[in-house]
Image (cartoon, rainbow, N blue to C red; front, side, top):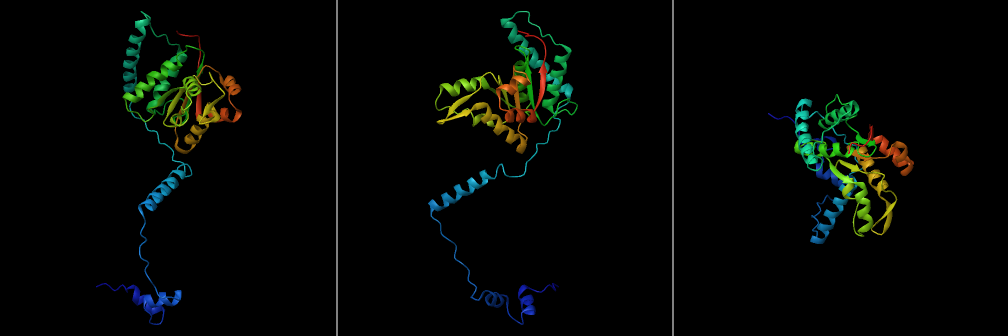
Length: 271
């Protein structure tokens, strides 16, 4: 048997015998009424939907940061075997133009290539932080872009969490300066992404009638997304850190150092 009193019984006990509706009426000073539902026009409903969509989008960056969790996605030996097949395929492509081509790796190269592989499968034995992007720098032809191109294929074919898009920053500058309506910002702030040839071109481009610095616009927004969501930005450049600092503002250079780990490619051109 249920001995729990209902709400009207409780109201009567605390108000000298008044029902719940009588108590509400006395406290408000007017009879309790139930408002009829508001009938919205289709135009009003569309405005309401658009309004709440703007609110939802506006809160996107105000929400508490959601840190990405990186877990190892395959054993290192499995990754090595998969990458070896990609390396062999790339060798065959190069041999078409350079018969007898062979890869020559220094000990420093081996450390970089093995840790790059560990980084993209989230192997905790990687010597670089797994939550920051990579800043590859060094002389012309030292293998920076070549390695990233093969890693792009490896991540894509293995469906890895750190799969990324590839962007030539010099190509973006050229296109933005030659095509009046081209947007070189919106696509490039999305997804994990590697930017090749950073620093080759600098300065402003026309963006919907306004001059903007393409490096500043892209990397400033990507820094914010790295802070909020852990979005990864990778950079390839022939400039050393001093050269980059000379080409970029102090604040932006500091942003890049915060969200990327510097990896130096030593030696002369392998081309």
